[in-house]
Image 1 (cartoon, rainbow, N blue to C red):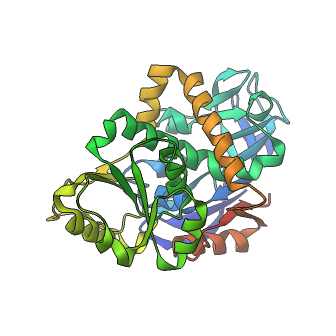
Image 2: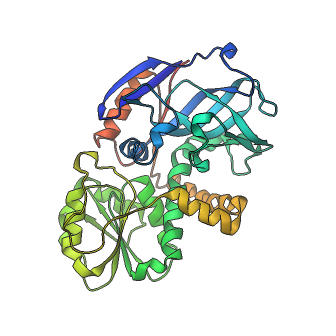
Image 3: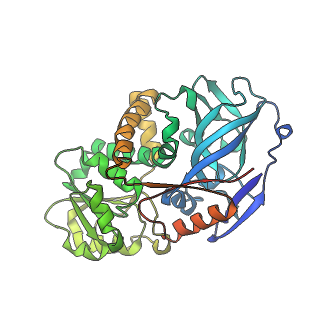
Length: 364
């Protein structure tokens, strides 16, 4: 088995290591062996690494001291099983390591999937421990697996951000500003916000990405980071930060002053510019944790109700980005150690194109 690993204190340092054997004889009673077929990789996965210690992302797929296995979302097939109800040949969607195999301990096995009950995952959030059987997923389409891998995890966060703000009456804001507006989670959020009345949606992005962000057609206004001084200070504004960029945050807080009513910290796409907000005017950043909002809505609507709502909006979002007349994502499939390492470093360094949709796999 091959594992892609990064140094937790130096994300540019990477290696490939031999992990748990892919031999079916290595699994014990109650376990199953999954062959990781393919997974997506985006800036969201860099956020998992950046917040790996603080938010326990490193704990899902442990590695030796000092190393980490970055979680990804993708599809895996059962190649061996000692667990009743989990059969060889079944295909599942879920949270995976950047590896060729994963050993799981299925629990709560139903006709639609299972949860991993491995000891090291028992205290981790259930939303990341669930594996969905494709043959029982009413929204699954084999022809759209790439889009599902790329967009389902990101759009789920987008849906929950929109729901959180609506549930909070927008904190009194009449406009919402989003950094890293070209990122898929950001423009998924813009897609949801654009469906609502009375809230202006403003995207901030690098000057080189302005044309792409405007082509999305989801933002009422698009500004480069150098144009933050053009933001209107006469209306209450909320900030949704997908970049983690301390300089962008400082410029925005200083420009808006008392007009800024809420600062929502979501991601860290600008990994080389991270920082806090000490001494800045306006509200301190509040971290958004998607699983917390998901739990609230699961309690309100039931888990099936939440999934149904997200899936309905996701279908519309996929239709938008996959429109052959204005295709917003160029999907590229790559396999092998060299391809995985290169793509990882490109995303880490911010070199990936905004319309890139990267699907990866590691050979067995």
